[in-house]
Length: 367
Image (cartoon, rainbow, N blue to C red; front, top):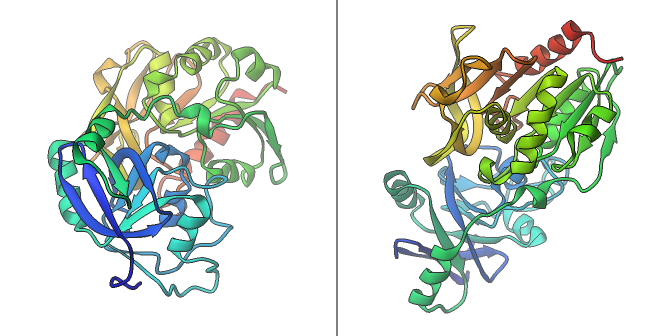
């Protein structure tokens, strides 16, 4: 990239800090919640992860884009990140599958980007003070007016923005099971992991009712990842509450994990700066083994609020000891906070999909 000729761009944080860098991707202004990911690779998956809706993503790894981007590695239909921040991006990527540079990707999807700032300093600010709102702009700005807009910003109810609008059906490999995947902003690889294990998958909108899910006569229910505050989804929580007595094998990931916990009477809390990256250690308490996981979430289930009569915490984070999974006793269900399907991330916990298959086999399905 040419640092000399690129247009200036600015990052204004809610605390008044201003970073001056350069523009790539689309020009203009955007406000979002500033978060960081420690992943060293997998930026295509990050940019196409619906869980980042409403957020400006900062990559802590200094060089991004060295293998370019292509049209086949997306985890969703496009990109819904509000903005993108890197220290440096690679102008001449080297990979036989490369179709676009990271700059071309951002322009294609209308994403405003910023580079050539001290991303280490920005990360330290977020780690010390917590996640905060910010604005990326390539335009002249009035700082006081900008700060008022930044502080007023809320990510809001974003699940409807990233979910399918009507059911979508996908055929599995040598199918044996029918799975209803409730889409709160699902990553495609969740569906692929089910398909290759012999599941026909029906992707259902976020606001599907319990009656609509039951009408599919599913052998299992998959609760997907997704963006935002889990408590902003009372309709989804109520649907899950109604599905619990049906005793349908259920597996939840990320937001799906949080929503089922809320449906069972537990509570969630917003973390100071969240867990985002491909190197989060998680201990499976039943296996007494720690795995490296890929994560992207800003909220967590509060461990001691999971009612003892409905289940128990099954996984904990190796760093801050927060809840990373729940195994339920009031229904054939289990959930995890991390991403066992991660592409562009560790595959250590893919065994959880096998456990879901075993759970459906044990229950005998609904056929």
